[in-house]
Image (cartoon, rainbow, N blue to C red; front, side, top):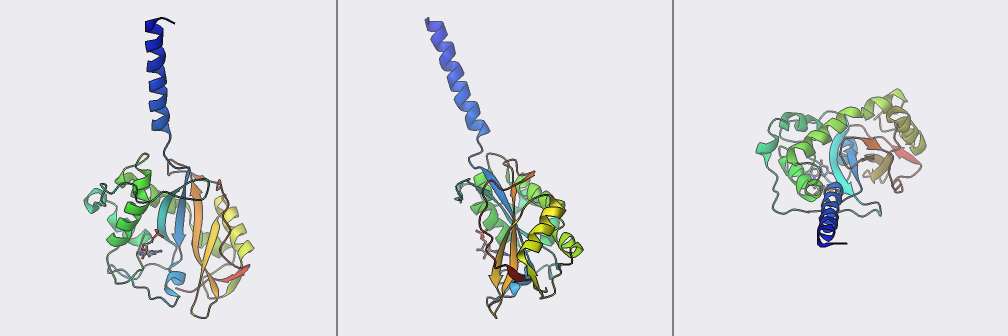
Length: 227
Ligand code: 5GP
């Protein structure tokens, strides 16, 4: 190959490297995590309502977390990218209703959102900026009306016990996707429905079946706490 040929080949290889970098988001999928406020509050640890008022008795967002197929995940990827409430000012009132904080002391939610952005969001900056990260997460929440789906299947937040499999089947039938369920324990050590995980593609917009199936961290019968 002549000098020109080599040059062209090198140019193509360099371009290929560059585009594959651009196409590789640096993670394999997202977990989209919803929390049941009744379970967050019904533990030995205290919960506090946000300064903006008691959240609705509905699933709230915990976060959108980039993950790897081996089960590990990146975190705190860009210390230079600080949470900036000014960038999401148009989303804040929706975040207050759909992404309320329950940690103490009471605050308006910014601390929770800042934590989620800094720990998880900064690891998906190859795909979306801060505004898109929060906007996409809110849009995912709109696409799964979990409480309605569960109630339609006769599963209500009434402190009663339900079969884990019935909960999973109802969610799979209602959303088309298999969820992963996490439990925590109430002060009497009963396991209760705490968080529901869905998997989302690397664009942060489409639900997918989870590439890895972590164990549900719940016994076969669990409580669905009142809130
Ligand atoms: P992550 O699970 O996203 O890594 O961390 C959650 C962090 O957000 C914890 O430090 C927790 O104290 C804080 N936080 C603030 N509000 C909430 C809330 O409503 N639910 C949960 N799960 N964490 C919250």
